[in-house]
Length: 203
Image (cartoon, rainbow, N blue to C red; front, top):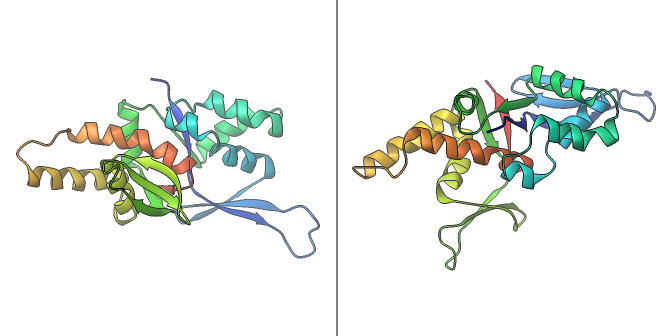
């Protein structure tokens, strides 16, 4: 499978200096304990990395897709900006189903930024995530459990390990192996972040 791109960090908006005029000095992205100051064009690329939730859900949001979406507003140099954002770790790249996906889980944390809306009597196997009562995502129970408790773990991988241990303690044989659980969640992270239902921090 082709490597996909997912945005990292928490967008904190423009920063204007007193008397600086109509244009902001920079745009801030918070990444772990650092404040990253991005110029307008780089920030536009970062914002665009949240676009196209369908591609994120289908695991087809590649570098090429990001450049395709961002280039009309950013112009020449979009490809180079994507490379710089990857180097600065405000974008992450990994291949779902491969070892790089497991490395991604070990080196990032996920923080929920939406509300858990639970399930319904009509569809008990579908759990909903949203804001102000509006459903933004529908996910399977395992992904919902990961998402709910992710803020409490030292990494996404550690959260999956804890969950797997809980499954093993409740039955003689869990339906999925630890790696299968991990790959399932690595496939869910992009749509969670793109839908603004969570944000990533690098370790």
